[in-house]
Length: 146
Image (tube, rainbow, N blue to C red; front, side):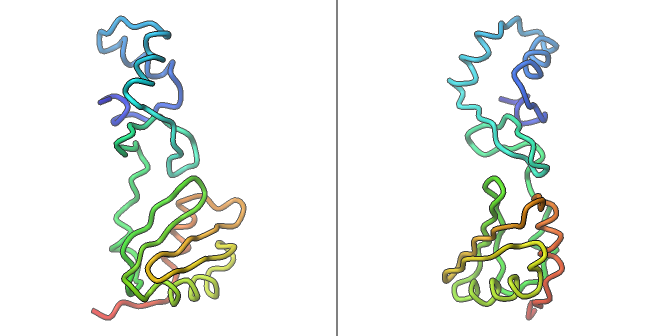
């Protein structure tokens, strides 16, 4: 589990090599079974590559930078990704206004948004990975009142 949390591993062979370097004499068959039992899964990282992660959410290199501080968006709480889709959490009542600004200001990057009271679903345009979406969101002209 520690190796999965600390390294970007895209296949079982990479994990097998690391385990053997740590002194574990393990076969491919045993490793496959252990991966299932430990609930290690493949998920996309920030670059869109698939890497092994623990089911408890410790994802190598896909923890977003501290974007909460970088975004100048009033009402913004968090940004999370699921494959190529993004979800923004906002304070109650802010989602529709922020979604409208996203649609009008960064439509080159975002195909569209769906907003509720405190949640926005972002649908990016083809070719926009997670970092490009983050950078586009940083361009939004919605200032915090602090």
